[in-house]
Structure formats: structure tokens, C-alpha cells
Length: 513
Image (cartoon, rainbow, N blue to C red):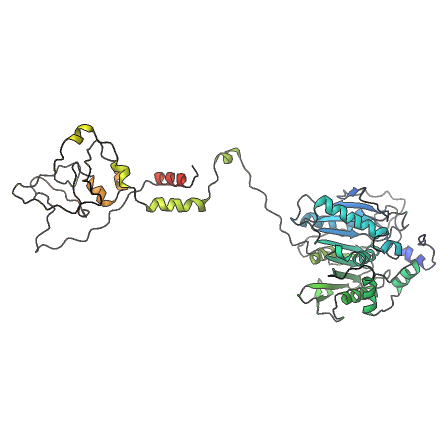
């Protein structure tokens, strides 16, 4: 069946006047004026994406920095526009760059429609598996295959005829999309010819919500969850009557089994905003009414103080950024860019990465554990000295001053308790005497035992060294007389720790050295 010519009706004259294309001009200017140079376009045309029964063109943009679960937003331009024109005006590629999601922009050709409108009113173009709907479906499949798109995060939006085709895609392939947004569009299924389209655009009849919902339900066999929807329309739109926004809302509320009365109403950037949510509290339908705005996409400063888009024909400055709000409704703005990696130098590669958490327990154990006595006492003893019997010498308080020998008539001190080892204490000569730092790491009793040249049975650590001369009373370990006051309680001897050695052992224990 051949397509009905768009110029076949007299009523279409006014419609064409409002949607006239300017043959490459960027504004309503004199046709003799030289056109402005086109700005650099980030879109890339993709060919051979499928059978393409609708004979559409495919343009895409995928930023270098992307979200881990890459979303896809399909954007459909309006009449008299192309993919690059609408992307520049609505700012979608800038949004994609800022928030890391992929873009797909189908484009209509003049061979299909002289005004480059998507044929949202032709049955063969809006039926599942046919025409333009099938072509857009093949483009989405190509994007999913090429860029690993998250199939749960595919969205679609459009203006005017692109908005009406957005409704057709949501009806014919609801399983593909998580949400959609329509700007100055029309409900699905209310027009099947050019005459129906013009009547729906100028004086849309009021239909019951159930009838509108059935038009969508009959378009596919889908019986699962329906996509969310955001609806935008200006109250001064004389190209597509504002009542179409109410018909779209009714159609989608019926699909979600929600009441017609809004559940919440407020002002956003100075414009009425209504919301409906499901049992889980998720907003599934919302409506923005842009007062005193004509036919077009509303532009403005976004909530993040950035401007997305550029004013032009059917791209109107209104003080509200519809593209940003739609992207937020889709959930594609919930992404924080990863910080840049730290700058590395050749010297940093030579330093092993040490985890302070893994090395800390080993270091703590090294600091708390005393040095084993065997490590110090194991020093080799000269053979000549080992053969001599051990000669008892008086204990000395200072190594530089010799201690006097006890008087002969003094009764010998009874033997004290031996050390934990059953063997007698080893003889430690001055040549084999451990270093002061090694003695400091020993137990106080062991330090007292090896601080003299002859073995001494240690009963308790000496609390305080006494400097004695030969004229003084000889040092003895006997207890003082009963009348003498008891000596103060011995204080623990402070250990001196070689921190460098301990850290070195900790690194060895942690396997880091």
C-alpha cells in the first residue's frame, strides 16, 4: 500500500507553514545571506546496521569516559530537523560527555517524508517489526552489540513527530525500554493517516483512559512491566494542541493502573510538575506544563548550573532544561567520574608497595617480644678459658671499677635458686661479652647473669647499682639486719630497643624484604 502524500490535504498548508524547513539556514534570515559554518558535530554515522525497512539513517555518539553499566538514550528529532541539528540544540551529546552514557540518534530522510518528519501516523511504520519502528529496533541492537549496552538501561525521547514516534516505539517494543520522554507529542494509535494526524494535532478528542490504554496493549503481546514516562508540553503550542499531553498521561496511567488525580503537585523551575508513583514509591509517570511556551523543546540552566543546548527553531529558551530533567528521570546522571590515576615515576616502581595493615601485626609482635637469651649466650667461648674451672668473683656494680672480694671470715651465702635451665650458667668472658644493645634486649635476670666474668646464680634483679671503694664494706648479697629499714621495691629495668633492627625483622616476617 503506497504512503499517503503529506501535501494531499488543504488543511496541511498551515501545518507546513509552521514546520517549514530553511534549506540549511540556522535561523529565520534572508535566504541570500551566506549560511553560518556548521559547528563540529560529535555524531558518527553508522551504516549497514540491519535490513533497515524504514530507510532511516543512524548516528551515534559514545564518550570516551563511560559508566560501568553503559546506558543508551535514543533521541528522535522533530520535523524540519536532522540528528545533528537537534543534538546541538537540545545538548544531548554534551550531557552524554558529562555523565558517560551512549547516544543513538536516528534520522529521517526526505525520500520518506518531504518535511523530514517521522511517519508516526502511518500504520506500516509504527507496527511492530515493520517500517521505521523496525529500523530503530535494529539500530538499538547494533549499539548493544558494539558497546555492551546494559539492556536494562535503554531509554528514548523525542520532540514533536519524534515525540509521537517515541510513543510508537514504547508501544511496539515496550520490552526494550526502561523509560521514555515525549515533548510536544501525541498519544499512540490515535492517528492512522494524515487526516487523522492533523485532526489529532489541532483538536484532540477526549477519549476514556481505558480506550487509550487498549491502543497500546494491542500493539504487542507484552504483559510485563511498562516503561516509565515523562511528558512535556507548552501551553502556547499552536502546532500540537496542549490537550495531547493530557491524553498521553491518561493513556500511560491506564497501563500502570493508576488514578487520574496526581499524587504530588509542585513547581519545578517555576513550572507545574505532577507525579504518579507505583506501590514501591517509584515515580512512573510525570508531567511538566511549560506555561506560555510555544511548540518546541524547553531550554535553560540545569540544576548543576550548566547549560545544555542552544536556542534555535523549535528549541526555545524557557528557563528550564528539559534535557537535563529527562536525563535525571532516566537515572543516567547518577554517575561520579573516577579520579585520575596518580602520576608514577621510575623511582616509585623500585619501591615495593607495603601494606601498613599487613606489616603492623608483625612489627607489634617484634616490639613486644624480648630477645631470646640463646641468641646472645650462644657466642663462641675461647677453648682455653672453657677448660679452666670457674673462679668466683665478687659482683661489681660498675664495669670500670673492680669489686673487693668478700672477707674470709664471712660465712658463704647459701646457694640461690637456679635458673630455669638445669645446666649451670655459662661462663662469659670479656672478649665474648655481648654488646650493650644486645644485653639490653635480654630479660633483666639474664642481663645480670652475663654482666660479670664468672657465673653467678641470680635470685632477683638488682634494683640499684652501688658505687663502692676498697675502704667501704665489702658487697654481699646477705639480707640487711632486722632493724634496718627494708629496701624499696625493685623497679623494672627499662629496655633499650634497636628500632631499625626490629623493623628489619618485621619486614622479613611479613615477607616484604
